[in-house]
Length: 66
Length: 448
Image (cartoon, rainbow over all chains, first blue to last red):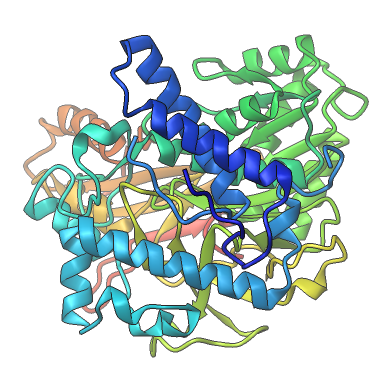
């Protein structure tokens, strides 16, 4: 998975920001798997919550359809 | 970092040029999403001759057409119940809300998805955190939790922050005062009018608010939260600091909040929305310090992208330097100052006189009518519809009155609107522009 090295404003991502982005992409990856109802619903919730962080910190242009 | 006075230190203190760049990127995204998913928006953009690829930054904002509430309601009327504005399929929705309609009994209907609700709550977090509210707080909501969106997002925002949330949907005012006291709430969220009503009830019950647990009030739903005299009255009666916020069902959340410095204005959450101020007649932008109409573009709602929406609210924008808190978000001086149109705000609920008239006129027994607004006990907005009964309809009147009151409540977010009989010939008649609103309130919810 290739993650961007800079945020939307062109600033280098901090280590924490890189980890947040990786966690978000990881959750989105999980949603492509065949999950049980409890897993699917809760991973969607988690992905939506982490999208909010990605959006707040301007790390990525993305809008997941959850 | 956890002790930051800012909910989002990265964007709340961005240099203005970076903030503008971020807004431009997000504008391009929201326009692309609206074009791709929403026939309503694509139609508007096509009529204006704009394509998404032409919108690359904030300088392109004025190429885009305005969105109006009338057009939104019209699209819902043509293809009920949600119109063709939605940018995502219906199955993405997790919640339904409404706000009262402008012209009749049909409300404006909104839908939001899972991601939208995260964003709605997030915007409230900017405001709560910015006013000093933290995880240890106990936050009481004087809110009915119905289809009116009101403080729903604030509730979720506080849960997200880790606060103890105290809901009071089905409670009487007496019960609410008792709960605030019993649970030692530290924050109360209410409309300004209801904050005063709670204080009155507390006095009557012998509850000492001034020396009590509540240290902060979050006010919303009426412009009075930024009127200095009203705010002083509320703060004095509660012995607490009060902050104004303002939001709207059309974006689902707040777009401005007052910070702890209480600079006499509300910061615009400029990393999540674009707020323009225009001359309501010409549609042209006005500068800092000039009064005009708010126009909002919201980045966070996926199901309902909102691009250049004319709010009809009157505001005066001032630069961020007016405040010493360090945020680079500009402010609205004195919050929302009034309305361009004739909408009335009654206890936080939007009332359009045209909508009232449309319902009243369905009843042939009503000869003439007047919408009468008063202030009761010096604090509480009351609204009544006074009707002259048409000669020959006296026998039906008791049933008509009951039906009319029920119809009005159903159309206007459950607001209780008594229907009162007026003596024959007592209400004014009009030959030209009718003025059927008699507003005798001490502080008018829709202006000052």
